Image (cartoon, rainbow, N blue to C red; front, side, top):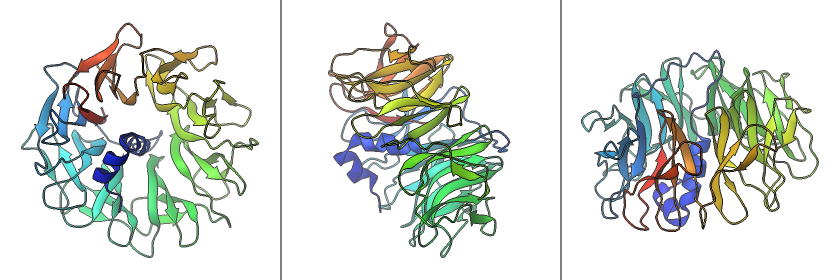
Length: 397
């Protein structure tokens, strides 16, 4: 089983990459009724290293950045995988009684923050709201299965079980259904579910390992990085086997990653290690183009729409900075040029500003705020003074 405590000690950056990739994505017609606590962002933070990372919240001000509750005083709770539904925020966190992360919920108060599951299983990820129900990937002892919750402990149950799809990952909602990567006993295929066991079935049954990853909803279809038998390309599915096919057939190492739908287009990194550039697609082969051609690659990650543009974390040759793109090659450039790099992670928009987790040469990972310009990009609050890491990733709006 994946242990986030051990992973954080080994590679802090991996937590952010995994978590953001699993955040909720929904497309038109999905019937999603998700809503969050207005004007509030949730995240994991520590004011010192003795308590460990616990649940915090912010309204975007220094005085409004406060701890919500200490969930595990014995060594940190590491809350992550946030998703919102009907005014409640759900997340994954450790408690003081189990060695496996459980499903929690919060209304932003200490009394309104509590676990919905307990025991040796669960470890929820990919939290996704659909038609008033929270769906997620949970571990039941036999593998990673599809689960659901109505916000109560008794209503938090597994949807599928063995011999149903195993190794469920990349859960998203689109057009009133759930889509995910699942193992059929022989190969990884694209799966679809209406939220019931009987309504869960494989979309594809190709004779090779399709291995669909980075699922993203866009223009009423599901796009993903898939294996065509010889290389990883951009794929598209309308939810049927006949309507699932590769969009691109680009020679060499393409391997589109972190596919994100923003401002009427798909953006992603592609090109492989050492040449990971920013690409854009309208969902067609001819409309899939590279926006950058930087030596060594830009390595774009953590993409978000803000003020009519795309913002992301990118590498400028000397370190990671905050970047911006208007969707054209000439309009794609670094916003900041902070010495030593900025290491932008998990950006969120709140009250007309961009907030993100970042670390510079003088501070550990803390909360930063930006209006999209270099002059007004600065650390909001130093939660854990000095080079101590004060925060992990931000939750949903």
